[in-house]
Length: 394
Image (cartoon, rainbow, N blue to C red; front, top):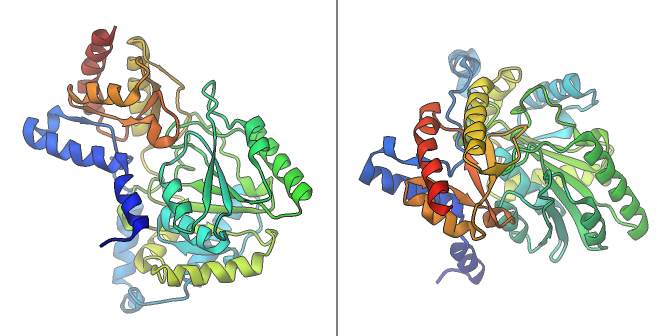
C-alpha cells in the first residue's frame, strides 16, 4: 500500500505529462504529423554545436578516466569557479565557487533549497500563474504554498495582494521570470518594489524571508529585453538556474544554485544545501555535464527559431480573435479561452487533435498554455484548426 501522501500526488499527477502521453496515443491513431501537441515545454531546437564538441573534447582528454566519478557534493570546484566568473561578468556580481552548488536541473535545485529552508507549516508564496510543480516541491517538506491571485492585465505580480499575504510564517517567496506559463518578464520596477516589500516585512516580523528565483528561461528573452538579476536588488536571494532550455539539454538534468554571501545565515545554508544534495539521493550533479556546461556558458540555442514560432502563433491566434499577452521570453503563449471553462475548451481542442494545458494547472483558470517549442510546420498546420475551433465556439 502506497503512502497517504503519495495517494494525493498520484491523484493530482501532472496534467502536462498526462497531455503529453495523450499526444503519443493520438499520434499512434492519426499519425504524428496530424497531431498538434503543444503540451510539454520540451525544446525542439538542437543544442548548440559547442555542446557536442565539448562532450568529445572531455571524453577524449587525458582526464576522461576520472570524469564519471564522485566529487564534492557541491560539484567540481573549477566548474563552480568558471560559472561564478561568468555570472560576475554578465551582472556585475562578486560570486566565487563558494556561492555555487551544482544541481540536478532546476527542479532538483529547488528541492534542495526547500529541504534546506523549510520547517513543517512554513509558508512559501508564489504568484499565479506559476509552474504547477511548486505545489509538490513545497509539500515534499510539509510547507504550505500560498498563492497570490493573478494580475491578468499584464501578468506582472500582484504586489498589493502579495503584501497582505506575508505573515510571520512566510519563509520564502518563489518567482519565475521569464515566466512559465505566460512568457512575461518581471520588470526591474517589479523586482525593486517586491524587494522593498520583503525588507519591510522582515523588519516588521523580525524574520528572514528568502526570495527564490527559478530561472530555467533566463537566456530565452526576445527583442533584447533585459531580465533583472534579483540578487542585485535583495540580499536574501537564492537563484536556481538550469541549462535545460538555454542549451536544449532537459534530459541531462544539469543546473546550479547561487547563494550570495550576503544572504542571512549564508554559511549554514551552503552547508545544509550540500547535505540536502546528498541525502535527497542526488549525491552530486551529473559529472560529465557539469564539465560540458562550464565549456558552453557563452553558447546559445537558436532563439530566432523560437521567435519565428512566437510571431507566427501570436499573429495567427490574434487574427482569429484569441486574446493573449505577447510573450517576452520562454516559449509559451498563455491564451484566454473564449469560453469560461478552460478544461472544456481543452477537450474541444482535443477533438481537433490540438493538445493544450488548462490554466488551472498553473493556478489561473480561464486560460490555456500553448508551448510553441515545436516545429514551425506544426504551427502552420495547426492554425486552421485553431481558426475552425473559434468559429465553432462562436
